[in-house]
Length: 262
Image (cartoon, rainbow, N blue to C red; front, side, top):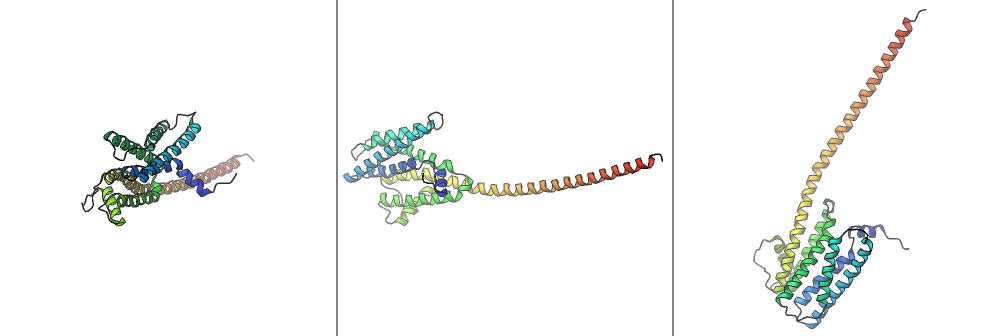
């Protein structure tokens, strides 16, 4: 059996379910291919991506169930995965490019479940020590969102303006120079705002945790220094007591020898 490199082990230790994450990410372009897909080829590609998402998630969920079938772990997440699988299977069937109100509601509900599931996969690994990864992930989200606005929003004429619209959307500043104007870009903006709130809140919390951690480390160093000094004082007192004890014993022995009759 081939040995797995330490880097690969570290990657899979941090990203425990890459197949599931890949499947969930594939559902994002699938949604927009169907939403903005008056072209038949685009709709077929969207349906195919939904079918791929369902197949990958089904395989991963079955494997996880066999792995944890004797325990009660991850029951809630597994039910969420099953709901997403059924939604993706339904989305894999051909449909008309003009959605009814009920279909809009169902598809947006599926998107919400997918966003929640992606968050549970990624954010569970976030700790104060992962600040660099958080910042990189946030920048990656902004650059990807910029590309999304560039493709979906007709008033955005270049990629730089798309990134600017993504940042102003995440920051909720609302300058008004660029605004989402199509249904696709408006829905995209909703999910970018939700993801942006989560990501920037975690980055801010991790930065605050770093400052708190520095104060705690300083207090810990001072506490360890005080403990070492106390240990040295106790050791010195013990040596002094042993010396005094030795002097007393020697004095008693001398007195005893002096008192013995000749």
